[in-house]
Length: 69
Image (cartoon, rainbow, N blue to C red):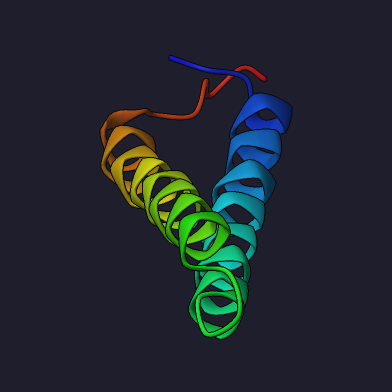
């Protein structure tokens, strides 16, 4: 059981990670045309961050709100 405000914070964090990771991934794709090494770093980093957000969705689905909270 988790407090509702904690679930709200987790929900916001999930979407920040997903959107931020995808934005970084796209910037990496665009950057790879000029500087391949930097582009790959951005693509891999953005992909990992977005994947962490997706994993947190599964974690969030298993958590239950505290009925007293």
